[in-house]
Image 1: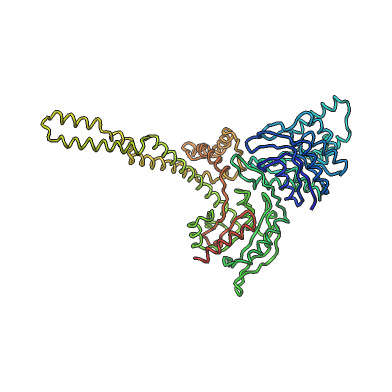
Image 2: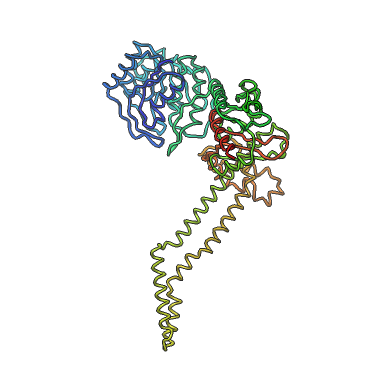
Length: 589
């Protein structure tokens, strides 16, 4: 385990800065050490301020680290003038590798440096192993450094050979002079996550202690991808959650999951045997999914089980279909296991509400290889049901608010009005024997005009309000039920829409789908994608913000596939923990 030093700002949320650096360095298998250059109170909304640490405190931090530790690599973030001077000073004596993330501006647009510090960056870059600016930062650096170097009438030839990784979705490794070395293609996740730049450069620093630069960058991209997918939700956004998942991690998880299985009474093994599998981040095909090449087979003599085969990538087509399909809906789902179906067990689990459950039917499937279609349908049905329930709940809330607005009288006011009305009726009864008919008639007329409960009865006619609620809700349900099939089409399966997608762009896409309908059918069309664009647009926004993680999917019916429960989870160890709950519930039945 090598010592990697992170020098940068302190973000109290831990999403960025030296806290995120330390978590990332630890995830790469190295020992993290930190030096704080600035206090930067910030969160997912804004940067509140920036206060540089005094030169004395900085010097004491450097002395404490280098006096006691052998530093192989230094990663820098937010730097001050004093920090750069000390880095250059200690670099002469200790000759460590420097990977610089030139934090000039925050993602919220705040300038995190000054002119004196920018001038010193030229000297720091000359000593760097790699710098990792984004495209805008690199343009700024080149412009600033060109102006400075031209003004001072010198040019350092070493700067031409400086390695620069221009970061983005696709990263470009090049020399400062412009010579391209390699391009690293990435995958875009529609999630704004705080601190990805810090995690990326720290991951490169950590991996570069034991592998070449290009390999370090490739592994760092995998780590960042996992950190975004498993990012921690905050009130205003997401914080990075450094997580490195590779083949070695997956093998380790699967072997440990089998060890855990030995400690529970595994009674839900199907007659055809069981299997457990786990995949890499965002799997593309079966060779990204690792599972047993054989099966977990029931041992009738001992009542336990034994495994056949070894864990191997590409070993199971069925498990690959399940995981890849589920991962499409929720990238956090990377593992699955098939266990024996039991109707009573499913009913009990639904009653308990411990798991999030959906199901599909196998009728009409050609063979066992079509299980992925069933998983796809299960996710669609679950997501659409949640969407419809969400809309109904909001609609009922709106109706309730309308009712409250119609009658703003308090309970005390209503009680007082009832007392007045009773008193009025009592007075009326006492005057029934009055000889003055006109007075009686006058009183009767007034009772009609001034009965204080008349207005109350009109405004709180609960039957009318309830009838209106029911009618409105029926109309809403008819509308939503009418688009259920439309939501289940390929629009749901397209790449995730950006939250910032303009409505007009979506409508153009929907109109294109509408044009595919037969012209004769289109004349009376009211259910095509284009005609239902308003609801579809709302649904897309709902889909992006809704956590559609499912714990269990089960299939029932049909004779071509044995009824099966598929347990889903973030890794194979989590699968076994869920299986433990299933087994306890099953034995109680």
